[in-house]
Structure formats: C-alpha cells, structure tokens
Length: 534
View (spheres, rainbow, N blue to C red):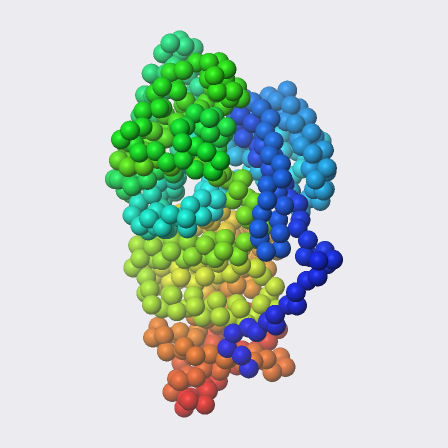
C-alpha cells in the first residue's frame, strides 16, 4: 500500500549512454517580416545552449495585411528560405521531425490561402508548420519571460504589463502578483499599419502623424479593456526589432534586458522621425528592422504612458524562447503552467460563486489519483494540468441551475477565456466538467465526437479519475483526507483513514465508478481504514 506513487530513483546514466547526451533542436518562426531559425542544444537536465540563430527577410505580412492572401512568389521565397534552413539544421544534426518545431502567427493565420501555403511548405521541405492561436502565443510569451520575475522579485508584486508589438498584432498580458489575469491581442502592428496607410495612398509626410493617431485609438481600446488603470512596469519584447533595439537603446550591454525610466525616456519620437536609410547607415541595422523599430518603440512608449508605468523594460526574450523551453520539457515550466491554470480557474470559479473548498478538494483528490494511476494512463504533465483545471471548474454550472449543472458547466467553460488554454484544451476541460456526473462520454455527443481518437482517450481517462474524486467528496465536507491505494487483482482499493462512516461515499462511488472500470479495467473498492468505523 502507498499513499503516493512510488517510483524508484533511476540510476545515473553513463556518459556513453545516448540518453545522457545533449540533443539538438530547431525552432522556426515564420513571421510577418522575416523567417527566423534558432538551433539549440538541450541537455538532459533541461539546460539549453543556443548554437545558431538566423534571420531571413520575407514579405508574408505585406501580402496578407494588404491583399488578404499570400502571393505565390512570396510562397516560393519562403520555400527557398526554409530549404536553406534545412541544410543548416542538417549540419547541426537536426534531421528528425521530432527535433523541429515550426510555427506561424497572424501573417499566415489571417491569409485566405493559408492551407495552400502550409501544404506547399510541407511538400517542398517536409516541414510541418503549426499556425498558433493567440492563446498559444500568449502562453509562450509568459513562459519566455517568467525568469525575469525570478530575477527581480519586485515584479511579483503589483501590476506588470507584458507587451509584444509584432508586424501584425500587439499582445498584452496583465500580470498581477505573479499571475496572468488578462491577456488579449489587438490588430495593431507596425507592418499592418503601414500597409493600411499606404493602401489609402497616404502622403509620406503624413504617415508618422497618422501612425501615431492609429496607435492612440488602439491604446484607448486597451485602457478600456485591460482591468487595471495603472501598472508599475511595462515589459516590452523586442521581437522583430531585437537587433535595432540593441543598437538604439542606451545602456544595453551584453545582457538581454535594458530598463528605462519613463520620466526620462524620449527616444521613441526621435527614432520614429529618423528615416530608415539613416538608421541603417548610422547604426548598421537590417533594413526590415530599420523600417519598423521606431514604430514598435512608439507603440511601447504610448502603452507605457497610457498605463502610467514608471519603468519600461525591453527584453530580447521572445516566443521562440518559450518554444525552446517547451521542447526542453523543463519541469519548472510545466509547474508554472499548472499553477497559472489553477489560478485562472479559481478566478473563473469565483465569478460563478462556486463551492471553492469542495472544488479545490476534488482537484487535490484528482491529482493524487492521477499520480497513483500513472502507469495505467501514461499521461504527462499537460493532461494533469487540464484535469486539475476541470476539477476546479466542474460545478460552476450550478450558478445557472442545479438541474443538469454538468451541462451548464461545459457551456460556461466553452465560453470563457482561461489563460494558457488553446481551443482544443478548452474543449477537453469543458468535456471533463460535462462528464463529472451522469452520462459518460458517447459518440452521439457532438463536442466529444469532434475530437480525434487520442483526445477522446484522454477525456475518458481523465473523466474517469474526476468522477471517482468527486464521489470521494460527495457531501462537500472534505471529510476524506488520508488515502491509501492498493491493487488486488482486478480491484483498485481506496482505503480512507480517520472517517467514521463512508457509506455516503460508497453509494456515490457505486454510481460514478463505471467509467473508471471500463477505462482502467479495475473495480473501485472503497474501505474504511483502521482508524475508522465505516
């Protein structure tokens, strides 16, 4: 018997064991102005070392934001760039698909011919490109900058606004006391604005003033939307303009961060008023960055002033670093993701006046069952985080009605924004809330049927665990605290210590454990321990 899963410590790996060696991975970011390649070395302990970083200009955003689709010549230009990247990747030993993560954002996502573009890239290069949702990008940004909060504990107190101004989209993350409480994407981008203004044949001498007016209108929308009037710090991600910012911003040495006090910061207007060709000659800035550096810095400046920020912190950390951390499987990253999801779920639950003590207790019981059954379900930390989120939210539908509240819970989750969840993840969490009681997953349920087979299996496994956990707190009194587990042939025994009578929980278990039996092939048996009378 054990109260937690016991896994013997693995013996240390010898240097000759391939598992002890570092592996090479590649990140490809297809952006509005350029395609970027980062090749890194990931060690078994999660340490990373950047080996190569390349950037090639590409005009995808110019096509999409002006014409609505990607021009055929631009597609072939991307193919040529990616073929060159593949050669570089091969030289570094990156040859397997599981060593590569290629992504694209708004410039591809908004293109009418995005599928044609993606298919052509895959046929010509063998590279499968994932088009990221806004929620995925925002999660990756949060992951990328999180060590800034570790290095500067003051950031974990009060309100901080993380901002990424890209070619097509500006993203905001409001971080309050270390947790993201709001995230949003606005169609404010340096390339998008220039293409819009040029499409109206705006005279060049008026571009700057109109650009600033457009920023002002969008920043007003931000201040109306973001649930904070003031922030202490704005963290600006250099993104597309990293090289330019490194050379233009004073005080930037060999590190990846520079801090400016807004009271003394007046560089944005100077740079945006300087012609791009002059910036290129004077500071040796790449042409595509010289064209957008001033506008990007102006966006950061205007946002910081609108929210009354004292400091502007500009960092070279980017979404690509978040992707690398994800590929490295750093345990701290998974832990932060799970804690952020739980915080977001609790905030949503409070909005719907949920039974917080019951929901958090069911979440704790679910995680203990998940860990005990690890060898049976074979799922990783991401599904575990989804289970915890669903357990916290499983009863929020009672806000609408106690009758069929599981269905109302699904509806509320589906129609809520939970930071860090993709649409696919959100659907899984909603289905888990749906299946915590009454009907089990069925092919006739349209949301469940829409999932692929692997995802349906994940839902079945996690829902089976959630139903058992919920049965253990049938009375919403958190009586069941001390558990032990054992396997007795085809029976999974749960022994409850220090509870005088477990009759209510047994009745609930009889009603809710059939899915567990179908999924895991074991009958759940609930027993009172030696300190109990039940």
